[in-house]
Image (cartoon, rainbow, N blue to C red):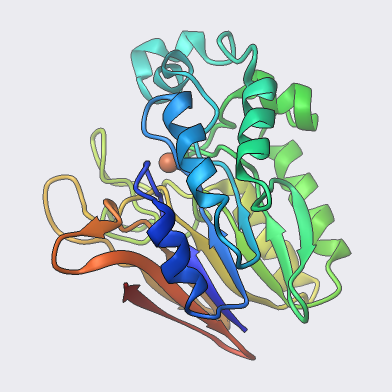
Length: 277
Ligand SMILES: [Fe+2]
């Protein structure tokens, strides 16, 4: 199976992107989220352009999607942390509007989809990485997820239901792969250093391993490949037969190179390569 993985779009998508990707004849397209930059309007306009894709496609929302600037600031600016959750009112309606704008591309979160011989597991939507559940009021009201343990239980339940080898789609990658700022999920902001992977996704992967459920690949973005302070992030890691792919080439359009996606080929083993069209 050949899948395109599209990293954080941040509004860089037009109908030519859809046409170029459709022409590749892939089996599917997985979007790791962050269509928007800092406005709901920009995210919706991007979603409408992505909706012109004819290849079957799935998208997990990122921390920039269907949120207003106050909400996002409350999550990522430590001094505004006291506002977390208080500004989440209306987010369910914003997500519904995004879902509608994206159709037929499917907006996913905490669910399994049949890819034909593989099972797509969509993880916790809107993750901003690290130890806390982002947008806590929305997550509680929509999914009944109050904390990381709730989220881990929910993801482990999905692993139990899977009837085929898994491909996992998240906005952010799992904890356990962030040894250095340049690691695939390493923290390169703030004071830098430390693992910025999602603990709930780590728990789900450990559960899959313990219960003999094969995970062929885990694909995500969020942690941009270009590091603050210079240098490039490691973007693939293979552990215990599973390929981890960070697709966050940002910006995804580059003069002289074209438009970026990752080609993920999944057989008994998965392989990934950067493609510029
Ligand atoms: Fe993000």
